[in-house]
Image (spheres, rainbow, N blue to C red):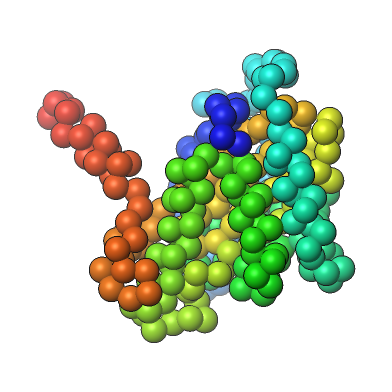
Amino acid sequence: MKSPLILGLFVALLFTQLVDAQQRDRRGGGKGGGRMSFEERDRLHLAEGFTGLTTHGKAIPGLFDLRSTGVTTEPVRKAAEEFLITLSDSQKAKTLFKVDDDEWRKWANQHSYVRQGVSFEEMTEAQRNAAFALLDAGLSARGLQTTRNIMRLNETLAELKNDWDGYGEWKYHMTIMGEPSEDQPWGWQFDGHHAAINYFVLGDNVVMSPVFVGSEPVVAESGKYKGTVVLQKEQDRGLAFMQALSPE
């Protein structure tokens, strides 16, 4: 939503998952001692269960109170309902999940990850417009622009690699968890190469976590989307922070 609704943005969860996966790889968990497949990683991580992100491995009950924010989430709910109306029965069957489904945890940055839900690649123009309307309702203007530009730069990557099977603007998926509701928990997930958004809604509260944004390249110097640029503010601020540190 175009408002300060977010309760927490724990990108650190991404690094927790990546570091854990890398440690497992180094221990030779894959076939023949090599790297693990995504299927093997999913099976291991999902078997472990998940209770939250902590500094010591134990959830702290009552850490956050559930209280009204005073900012309506009705535009997000209506956009989700209108998106679902555009889908065929077969598309809905692979897009709708229970609100507590493990699908929340099945996302990855890599392009080769096998994703669930309906892809933008198979959507009609009307379905794509409805999907973007859902993103627009849930994200800030800058968040939506960044997401769209990451998708465009994935097309640039396809051009550079001459590989439209692995990359491309429309290789992103949408899933809906639970039923869009005014007072019951539900949410949606946007997942693809260099972009993953998990968006949970309960009443007028939203938790957008975990989120991954990235790009390769970050600037399109040629091709269909020449001139597209992303994440420069984040890059510059990160560099400024590092340069401000003392040698110690």
